[in-house]
Length: 284
Image 1 (cartoon, rainbow, N blue to C red):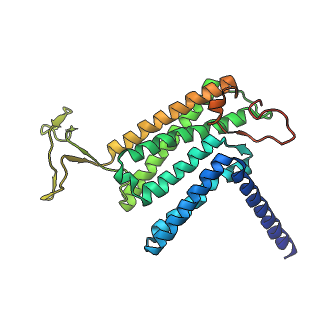
Image 2 (image 1 turned 90 degrees about the vertical axis):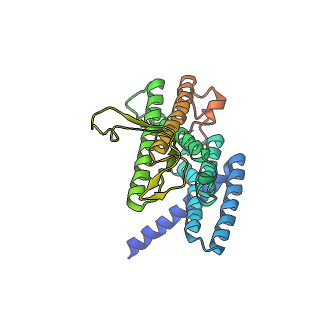
Image 3 (image 1 turned 30 degrees about the vertical axis):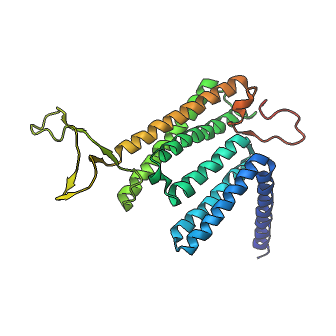
């Protein structure tokens, strides 16, 4: 019992220390702190409103969003990584835009471009994460390898695309298991299919100028044919590709200049340095 009590006491002490350090981290950068407080206030107000309206699923989304908003500070404290204010603000706004605006305020349905913009930003952020993980490891004194700037950028790009593909796998799985329609349908006015060939050959049959679709005798009320998720998935992967490619270029320039480009430094995480260490964090 004594050992268990000591362990629990030590765990609580570490949790309090981590919480205190996270609070300091959140307040450290003025711009990201202001954005964090504004978004946190908006989420709390939304949560109260959703609770009063009986939308308990949305209340859960608000709680999840509050948790996600503190993840950047948790990562910085736990893994001793410094997120530039610019990148941290992008992450915070992305979380709010995806969960509160996208899901609760139905921006995905109101603005067709909303999902595209978020997937582009997701590709950018995922590349930033992949790049920083490899770059920080590459710059450790105990590391046994030395990757070139081009290879680091390629790893960041591949990491981002892998995350994008895994997310599409998740959407496909949820749609098939629970019928969620995460892979949003698209109305098209022409289709091209080998299956429609009456001779059962590989020649493609094209149907143009589709103005309506009927299923089991019921008109769907759409001005075309319903594409089930394919175009949405490919569009998501394409914009993820664009976001990943953009950051990969940033990462390449960053490593080549090793932090001398102050504008790009605003998007690249670095290793935290001890206050007594006079050297710059980008000069490992």
